Length: 471
Ligand SMILES: [Zn+2]
Image 1 (cartoon, rainbow, N blue to C red):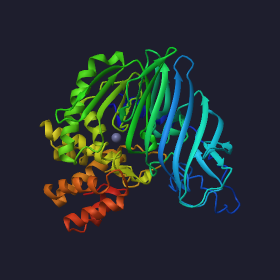
Image 2 (cartoon, rainbow, N blue to C red; image 1 turned 120 degrees about the horizontal axis):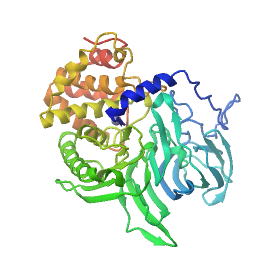
Image 3 (cartoon, rainbow, N blue to C red; image 1 turned 90 degrees about the vertical axis):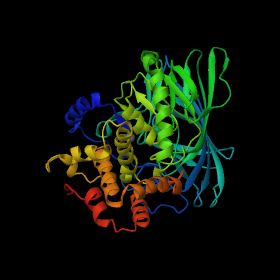
Image 4 (cartoon, protein in one colour; image 1 turned 135 degrees about the vertical axis):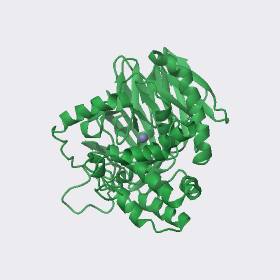
């Protein structure tokens, strides 16, 4: 995620006003309680200590088939989600994450299942209990008016956000549940098929590539998209509205797809061209591009941020400059192909994407990473960035400036310590070793030490884990 610098200042002011608002009460999900949990019940959370009810235990999703109908005028969504998964334990009951919306039917392997709702937990009781390591398919039929998450501590509104002509869908950190039932945590990655039906004249955009041409019948058009590479739930999108499109390839030959709301038509070619140039350059610096297409979308919802939706970053109501395009496309490697197992490791996404902005400036000759590092390092010891160790992102303040800027500075300090040759080899080895996988900070530190042959404990401790300004 990256921020439109022009709105950051006003957002910070707003957030400080909202800082005293009461936090949401913890929701006790249906499958937990004071009793010793039954061994065959899936846990209501995937095991992230900072987000205890995000994701679910007991299974691993391999594929989401999402058939969505959406009518912008009524904001009504209807959906059928077919989820293919494999159990990691015997399951007599398991949960999915879904907030709001009305569930009318759930089947497991074609048999009607009993289900219940508590908070954002959809608890499913299959007619036939599932064994260990069993492949199963759960189908959820649901409908309603999606309600995005409004979370003042994590920068505003996210999830499925209705707009006058459609919807702006950006879900970090846990807004996927606002529009489809999910194992809504980045630790569980899956491939996706999207079948999105909208009124004729409206365009539906999703991750990956289009499957066939859209088909129109009875005043409605159906768009089909497929992301065949593993993707985390918050990167899935079904962005809907009036769009102008530019399709082609990057100079290096990667399929490139840019889409802009008509209000931003003047930015369409720039978005297409810069996204192509950046994707090609990062492919040289970070290793081969991990997905089958690149691009970007500008919608007219003034989110004040951009999200690195897999293959199609989404820019919220502003024309992105080169720096933020460089940031969001760097996430295709750091955050999308390699995703975090726990939210506290978010600097592995944001520190790297921030450092990519500095590398882009260096590439363009507008600045050097070292000059940028020096500028930030000159902040006084009283600056809040030094009190927030970026290696432990905090659940109620995930997108703190430290996770971005001090995270990026960590990489520059590392680059200076191990030299350019080892540093850039490290970036490529990191993206190759964990392509489409899940990563932790400990794994990155171990690889940096292995490739450099150096003990980097004190460097990482000072930059990532200490609430004080490093030397
Ligand atoms: Zn970012």
